[in-house]
Image 1: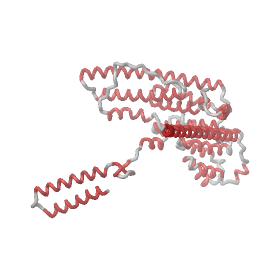
Image 2: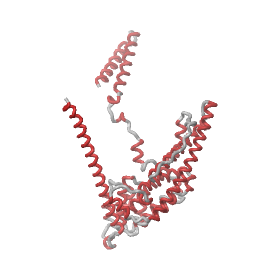
Image 3: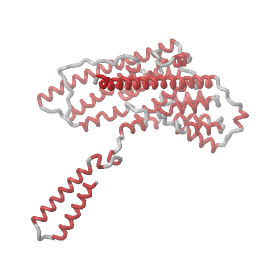
Image 4: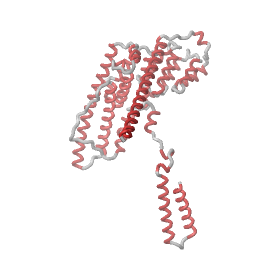
Length: 431
């Protein structure tokens, strides 16, 4: 009996060992994959830092026609990982010497998803290794995303789209710097100096966007801030090869921490205002029993504004390896609402729109636009068939009672309806 009891324990122990071994194998595979990825980056960086560009005679043998080059340039506006290989083959077959500016403009206009960034880096590397003026022109073009000027078309652009465009452009700039296409890190100094300007704290939409961008930079560009790097030794070796000086790291770190302290102060101020409004609303509720629509809407707007700001600050703190700010609690106040969420949703709609939680529209749609299960799952599994059968049986009983109460009125019609209803109910039960 004791021997039989030992078998389940032995089986569980063996299953645990197999599971642990499987986890170790997966972890080792991830580390190996990361090593290969970094080694590929190092190779690409060396090729970009010392490009072996073809001579003009070779380029003249390629297709230089306006029609062909225009067609290829149009495809640069739709860079994606799926089209990377085909597009690079086409770029190798044309001479863009006279169309570098147009090619740069197309890349700057491309709506890149996070999954397309590496494809864009590969394509930009190819163009950089062929055309000497490509890199400087690209750097200038991408920087305009952050400093667009006061063009009318820019003022009319959707704020959420602008925020996502800035995020994808910042990611692309960082990867281009890591790949050696961009060698001068001064562009990041200019961008970070603007994003951490305390003047932007007066505009809540700009503050939300900047917090998101700064968190992205801190996560992806930890080496600029002197933050601890994780991963295999080859990872550390790669980032050391970027030659970011201690003075530059000090400059970035100071800008980030000064901005963080300032935005935390704004958060505390808004938290104090929120608590005071909750005190006032509690008094009104005790006196009148309800809040006016204006008071409820104003409170919801302030609460949503505070919640969005707190999430942005916490995200930045996490990216900087810091603890998020702790707000003082007040046990005498509670959050109060009017019960009508429609007005509160409208009040906070504009603020939440510019938070740019998602990297792109496809990612947002994947999480927010849920499919209708009734279009994919049989009705039997959802219980719809049983409910329909019950309804049909209830109608049948009503028809039967009506027929019994009025036997002389249109008997053939009633009999026909009854037969149809019974047949339908039987068919539903058969299903």
